[in-house]
Amino acid sequence: MTTLHSITPALLYALGGAMLFVLGLSGIILLDQPLRKILAFNLMGSGAFLVLVGLAQRTGITDPVPQAMVLTGIVVAVAATALALAVMNRLQQLQESEPPPQHKDAHD
Image (cartoon, rainbow, N blue to C red; front, side, top):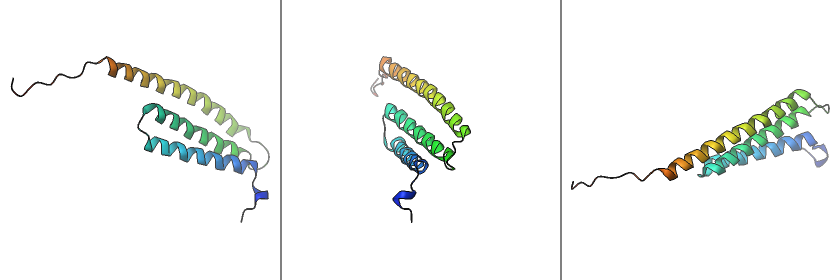
């Protein structure tokens, strides 16, 4: 059984990351608004980054490869978030500017 003294910072990072990932995944599944889904997806990414950081510190010596992967992932996540927000904004503008569809009456 794990005692409180055997919990390492790496394990805390990994457990916190797993919880963030699950929370983000539930947000993607349960939420309807696009902005909230984008934020939930970012939460999932942050959880994955924390797991990688935790795994990089397992042996007590920090491994630079997972840290480089996390830094690259952060840059990609920021770019993907910016793209998703721009697409969401454009779709919202298009939906607001379109006139409602005209329905023909059955009597015409």
